[in-house]
Length: 160
Image 1 (cartoon, rainbow, N blue to C red):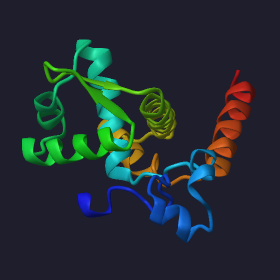
Image 2: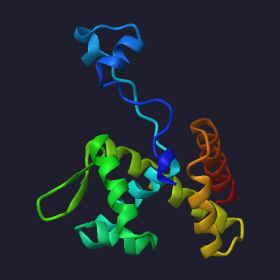
Image 3: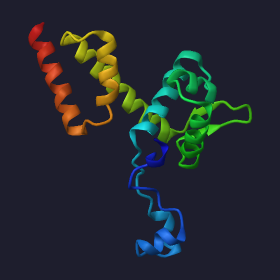
């Protein structure tokens, strides 16, 4: 599962990456491509956000309990998320989202809430709607999601 944790576009940090891209060390700081992360990383970030809202503090064990993963799996994931600048961990083991992590988590969680609500309005059982939203939230393009939002808004206005 974690082998493909991060997708194909990664931040260029090494000299080898710069040479491969035809750049020298001096232009290194100017060339940082946005990291695209996989569903598993998005799920971790979203879970951290939700747990932070619920309990105000988040530790690895809280994430493991919430997702029903082993502590070892969560530990590996947190290390990767830290290395890539999405989370920070203090000396007491409390995890916080960085600005980049917060942005991704907020986007995914917003999609999740919107999709769950939409599916429930269609008559889907709330538990099924939440589970389906969790799967769909990662795969919809921005264009499709925006069109879905427009559709919901239009039909909500027409129903009033």
